[in-house]
Image (cartoon, rainbow, N blue to C red; front, side, top):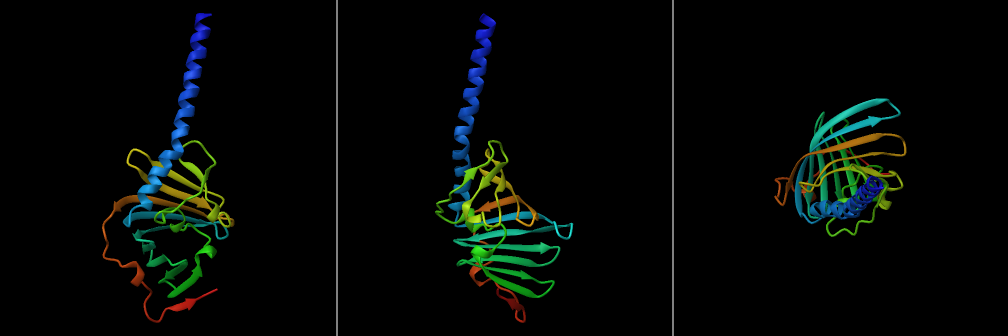
Length: 204
């Protein structure tokens, strides 16, 4: 009888701790996201792994994600120079290998948009599909192209370790955050950052 009572108490305590842990999980996520949202400037060294379903090929790229107020810029240095600029609801994608820049509106961009979760003072609406880290996070503003983002958090350092997702064409992207630097202006001025003269411009 006494052993059964101890088991019941232990089980109750275990369930209580699990419930308490999950109750704080969303708050912990909000604290990490707020760190990025409230920083007017940041630079994040990134590694991006892409898998293209149609071609059955993979590509690894290396670069930096920059923030300057509400403008964002991803510059890839390897395997060749590319950039994606997010500004004023317009996205510019430049690829030096074909000397072409694509200009589209933000709501037509079928990939991860840092504005969707990092915009300053953003009122981010999201739900959790999973209870364990990494978390599957559903963001309505991305739902047309991406069902959810899987975000791996480092709660001890209040950082994001990686973001991954799969689009509706089954292409997969893993974006690893290798080094985070906050509140330091970079030499890159995002509003003035652009493609070279002679670039072919494509608009939908």
